[in-house]
Length: 396
Ligand SMILES: Nc1ncnc2c1ncn2[C@@H]1O[C@H](COP(=O)(O)OP(=O)(O)OP(=O)(O)O)[C@@H](O)[C@H]1O
Ligand SMILES: Nc1nc2c(ncn2[C@@H]2O[C@H](COP(=O)(O)O)[C@@H](O)[C@H]2O)c(=O)[nH]1
Image 1: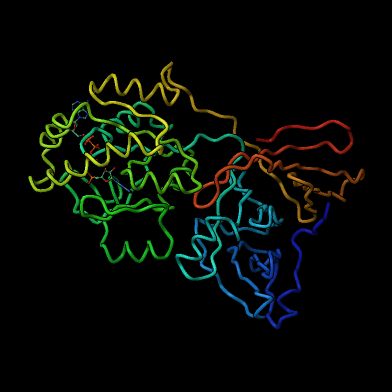
Image 2: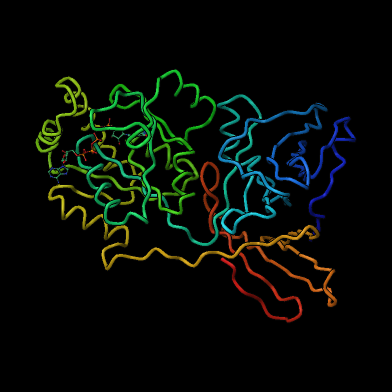
């Protein structure tokens, strides 16, 4: 069990001729040293990332993906599984104190290939078993939006909609930033290239995509994220580490789909025909691709909605969705962080107390799920009373 001093002033960069401005941590992965640092201990500062490549003797500023932690008063860091660094933030809110910086995970490796640069990716640590995002897919006109609106209306504090980007023109009843982020193709293509999208696809001749930020904004609001995306997008999300549940909505017949699209009066004849042509392939893939956990037929709307609620475990009385709030990790300036198998121990010393009390916090990382882009979930946090032989109070 290796013990690492926390808030260490790491001389690493001085040793290589760099001026260190303050409180940084570092971790070695292969021949790279990842330096994670804020500027000083007095005020809050951003957590920047730099990489020292020992094989070339050069410093590299990586492309940083994901939403990063807010400016903070300091942090500790410890390497897990040789591919991600767990960061414990000082002076943060309870739901914002653990973050992960992925440095060599599958996602990071893929993004390095796509972007052609060094890449690191942040994901926020979520304690316990947070509800998984829900991906809803199906051909245009089947009623996805209608069902999602019903769900959001009945459970406004439970669900949040992931607002996609699209290059298609807004319909007369659609608002920018509410129904979609309407954008230019060149801007969206640049953002895709910069790794800002969880998934994207060309759908009926336009570009659509889910930004990492859209999904994180919902998670940050404490709600369960709903994504309305096409089958190609669902496939990409399935291949990502978002760890969602996938529902495919099927029409009762192509004739009925045709009627619904026409009755909506939002597309031209040409566009309707294009959407109907694409629907056949989508239905085929929706039923056979193995992407979806559940297929719902939207014939009678009310019945389909009841089935959707049942699948989401919402068929009884309206759930309160009030999980107990997790307690924070109140890190003092002096503490050590150590790791043993899948457990990280934070030893907070409070020498000013006569009894020199020790406050131990155990982070169980054995069941971590998900990861960048999105959230790293299933982190369990316990406090340990060092003066008794028993555990624990679960803090999450
Ligand atoms: N079960 C149903 N029976 C009859 N009409 C329905 C049913 N479900 C939805 N509709 C209607 O069908 C039309 C298309 O529905 P909606 O816009 O929700 O489809 P969608 O799957 O979200 O389409 P798109 O992918 O193009 O956004 C709407 O006018 C809606 O009111
Ligand atoms: N892959 C993605 N598909 C998306 C996204 N947002 C919407 N969609 C799908 O596009 C079609 C058409 O939508 P419309 O609003 O123009 O009728 C529909 O099937 C949506 O599910 C996205 O972010 N990614």
